[in-house]
Length: 174
Image (cartoon, rainbow, N blue to C red; front, side, top):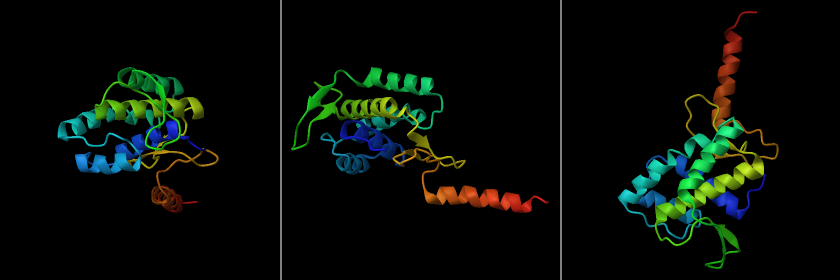
C-alpha cells in the first residue's frame, strides 16, 4: 500500500514519534527534519506538550473497532485542525496543510498528524495502522505491505512469538 505525501507524512511521523523513547527538543528536531516538517525547533515545554498530545494518538494504532478508531481520529482532528489548504513551499509538490494562521510548532505537528491519520483511516480503513502483536511490545507501525496482514513491528518480534509457540507445542505431550 502506498501512502501519498499528504497522508503518509503525518501517519509515519506519528508512528516514529510514538516509537521514540524520550521526546527531547534534539530528538524532535531530528525526527521532524526527517519528515520534512518546516517548524522543528521546539523548546522543553513544547516537547512536553507534544508528548502529552501524542498519548491520544497511540490508541488509534491497532484499534480493531473501526467505529472507535474513527471516533479517536475525529477527537484528534477536532482539537488539532483549523482549516485545510493546498500548499507549495520550499520546492515541494502541492500537498495539504491541515492548519493555517499559526507558527506554533505543536499545533502544526498535531494538525499534520491528525490529518494524516484521517487520510489513512479513510483510504485504508484504518487497518494499516497497527500495533505489534508480541505481548509487551509497545511499537506501532504503518503497514505498507502488499496484502495488509502485518502483525509484528519487526522480524525479531515475529520470530520470538513463533519460537515461543513452537516450544510450547514441543512441551505438550502427544
